[in-house]
Length: 249
Image (cartoon, helix red, strand yellow):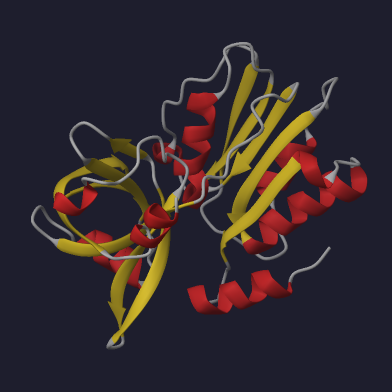
């Protein structure tokens, strides 16, 4: 275990082997290389950190492992293409087959509790890769709700959900600090009987608003919810990390 932990902190030098446009604002980039030979199987929903250059320095950017083809040793990452000029979006938009990148990982997986009685999963496009992995691993008899916020109707993807799970798409072209369409959708859901498992990831203010609604208004317990923010409107990635650390219920 110690050997694997150490290896996961060392850079893996990888090469872009394929690019697939999933929707107008989502691009799948496939990476391969000899450094994936000891990459562990079953790490979907875990993460890797891309080592990218920004202003002459190395910036680390975290991305969910959408899929890892263990036999072919190919790592698939999905990028939401922001127009903010951040290093990860800029790299993804300029990437082509043969492009090089170093990654560190994998890091820990964050999934719903599959033993729960019902599920609520909500996220925006930055969380869509992790949302997709959660959906794919739900038990066949799962009950509950999935709410996903996308920039446009063209960004809606075909995601197979169990028969007992409702999936709702929320189109929101412009994120705002005081308007939370994803929260309004979550408020429409009737709570089901039994112990829930809830998974929330989105922009900082949206994620916080949903978390507070579920905990303070619906009485959801700490062990029944995972909530995180993947980005912060108006802040850089480093500034977002500081905001997350200082955010308290």
